[in-house]
Image (cartoon, rainbow, N blue to C red; front, side):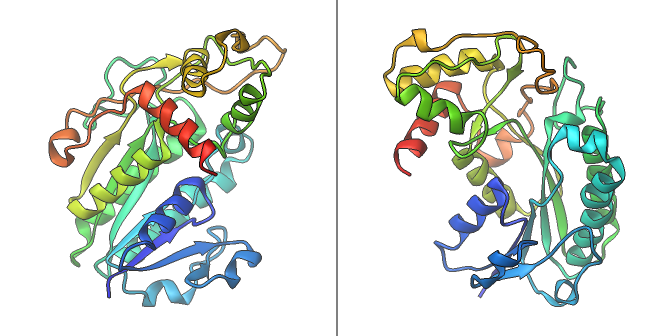
Length: 296
């Protein structure tokens, strides 16, 4: 039976991937650093601040998804040594150990490897990170591709840059959806752009890339860049609530800094012909988000 490894099974993407994979005939192993999660079947302990455990070198997985990471930009800025250990050093060590045994490694990356206002963001475009988080992601990408090319075993790696993955369990949408459903107003940013994709779209795209087993760089993106307030109006329409509940505000309105701007959308012209996967329309993302919320 084919074995699939999902590193970071507690993360939004890792949990959804493992759940989807377990509905099939494959043996799926996920990892967690939380002791409470280790009681579940098929969950192994892995903490990327520690040395790699012995079981990693003995596992025979056909594919591994590396979803464990420090993902908050501010956390990477405030503790760059810790972020480097997790996002580069241990991630690369783990990937190399797996690839040397023939495992194909899928590495979800970020739009943060590009400048927020860069004009061109194709799969082959030069990276230009502006944050510590983006620089670490870019370094990990480079190292993984280098290690994959020098491995003699039939493993390889896919670098998959993904725009903002939205879910009703993730901020700010876990607050927006109940508020709007109850007739309460929300204040989305009017001057912060992103290009959302649904969790289901991201999972299906990653699985399609894993099936391809071709070393390279791939993009999964929303079809357009729009502000959080524009997307909030789409959510209101999908929910069937009054648009007056959306009260757009600038990012610095409450005296806080707000999220750091990142590159919103990615060009998929090199990915789409290979996978038959195309940028996801924003209205479709909003509709899927509402269906996810109502189906909980």
